[in-house]
Image (cartoon, rainbow, N blue to C red):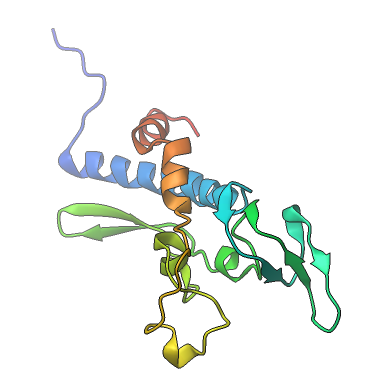
Length: 161
């Protein structure tokens, strides 16, 4: 006598993994937004922001927005990095499945890895100037630390959120 719990073909397994990755993408989209907005990131210089958001700020004469003093805060100044996130998507590449989430702000890689990304440097000179002290703010790694991929994927694969 045989008991079948499920009939699985390689295509069924592949599709189940793709569906699970898509659901995990939603988890990471939300978590990375939380990490960008989390006031844990060290800044050793003052920054002018369009809006104050969580970290407060001081109005100054003659300039719009507020100045937020050095210290730990979030990575949201103008909101451009936060708004540049793309919807997670699952892409099939030959024998692989890839979950893709992008941040399309032109300076997103520099915020992530550190280096020069300030608007105070003329656009044509940004690649040639390296300002010291621009620390990396890896919100993706922070999201993975807070929600480990194996845990998220396993939970989703089992039918959780």
